[in-house]
Image (cartoon, rainbow, N blue to C red; front, side):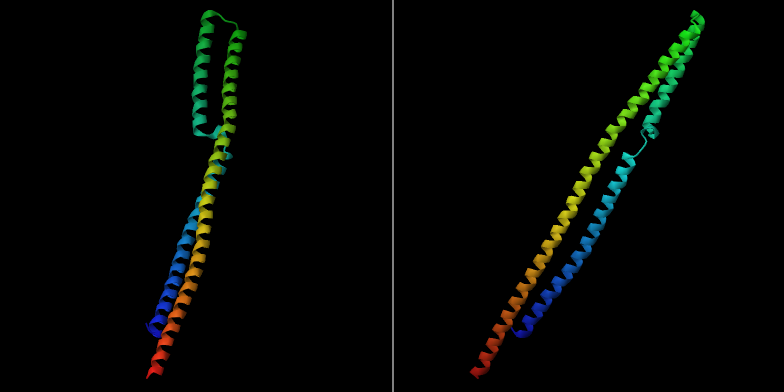
Length: 179
């Protein structure tokens, strides 16, 4: 090959490496933006779940509403029964206290579930966050490897081109002196 073709080959190889590096950088930026977005969404979800008031959850509100309705029916039935049987007002009041205590126990049990829900939210957050940070770490490691490869390929291409140019010059000089 000649000096011109070797130089063109070197320039084309260098240009391809630069173009590949630029395109790769753009794709890595997109990937990093997506990972950062997922990390933020995970953090927002954690905050929403961890700091929520368990009493304001729809499932909790439904349980409490159903239990209150059941207690109202039970209290009405007990009042009617007390009127028929002639129970004393103290007996009716005692039964209402038992029902109120049962309702308090339900609320207490629901509140105790709050720590379990918080633990679950924290575990999900930690697991997902560790996974996403691992993905980000892998991306950085790949980026470092790509830069190392680009540098090695550039040096190899430069060395090869210089050798080819040197060989071409040796042949040209040798041909010049043979004349």
